[in-house]
Image (cartoon, rainbow, N blue to C red; front, side, top):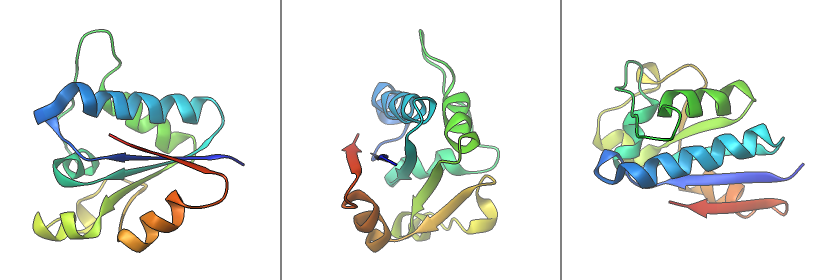
Length: 119
């Protein structure tokens, strides 16, 4: 199966870019792709339990987009270094989210059937 790996490098300081990344990921999941979303920097905050939702005009809320990826069997991964800098542990994450390092990202992004996008 084809895989879509979406790396999100921004938080609400670039709200529209953040939402575009999650929209593409959710669209990929709805299209039947195996989707893996990687969160780095302040994007990591959107994998936390109780995270504030993000809403912009003409888009579903970020939580709906994120939850659709997880509901389709997609993965939500927080960068290990980013988590450590923010003192985020696995216990802080939404169900289905995980923490992993750069080696796991490289493996997913360079897999034969993978397309990787960075936002």
